[in-house]
Length: 221
Image (cartoon, rainbow, N blue to C red; front, side, top):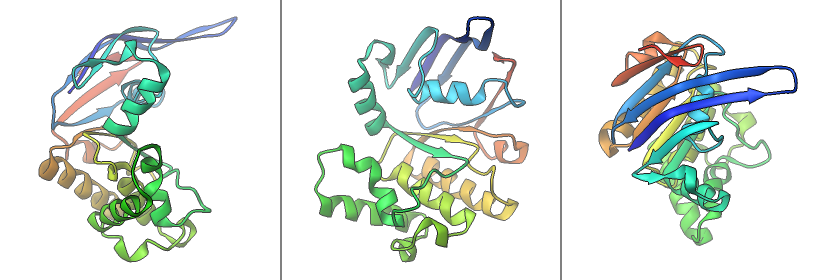
């Protein structure tokens, strides 16, 4: 499903050059739940952003679902990202002025889907994460665990084949973190969704199929 070859990311200023990723080779089969671990600043989020087509590598090739994305125009990349990928972030990134169902509906606004159908799809996504009764609430009225479940509903509303999760349990206590991992594992097992998760939590990483470790931008395991 995902193929990375010789991925390097270098950040340059007038006075300094920093290598964030160094010749990463990675294959993620369809339906795998992969976790990425490593110390702060080792390149985990940079790698996830490159896989998610939110950033471009300095060198190397990316293939997602057999398509070489590095050759795409920015418009084609955005369309592909919207249809194939779902994103979950540590800080939720919910829009405070929108209620829950409107937040979940957001990714569908970029598709040719009627308003009625968008609402239906958003309601179904919320039901799948156990928040059907909260659809008219606002983010400020939710707990941290509920906010993350809304973020998961938003990530899955368009039925993406791949979910990229950056520290999805990082702002949650252990009980809420386990609930979020249970939802992710259910998506992976029941629907065959490919999931790549960045985490600092070894306990959460052990709940996934495979663990990749980074150190100073290099894959070490």
